[in-house]
Amino acid sequence: RELVAAAGVNGMVGGQYLDVTASADLDAAGVRRLQELKTGRLICASVDCVGLVSGLSGPDTMALSRFATELGTLFQIVDDILDVTGDEVSLGKRLRSDERHGKPTYVTTFGLERSGDLAEEHHRRARDALAEAGERTGTLEQIADYILTRRR
Image 1: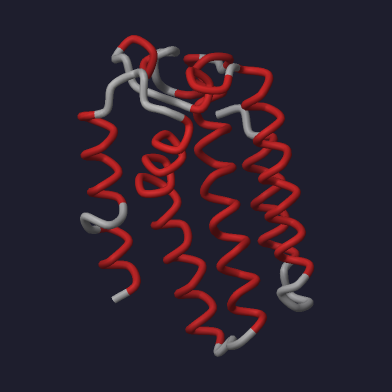
Image 2: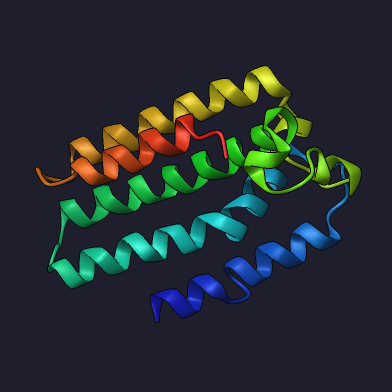
């Protein structure tokens, strides 16, 4: 049920709809909401499902949900930064495609430098949430670190 909801109109499908119909002058809250739906809900659902399968409950589950929320935001910010600063060959797509299509992104809303600061902040929050999630979070920490530093 969690994955279906995350993929539907209150998740990825809704985010994609907003992405296609949003104007470039979407405000900061709108950009955050769009990206949360487009990417974040699926990441959250994936992590929540792992928690369910693992038999986690209570505080550990809440900490993992916070981690997933921050990870989804981190992923989208880094993706937006790479759309401007990345290497087309490594990324496998043309750069500045969002800008060319007039799509609102973290970079167009906050600027490149502030977006980098926001990425660092969400990475820190993700790691902080993991610190509250029990002992077996090493792989999730590595995923958060990779997303922050990825170049493709």
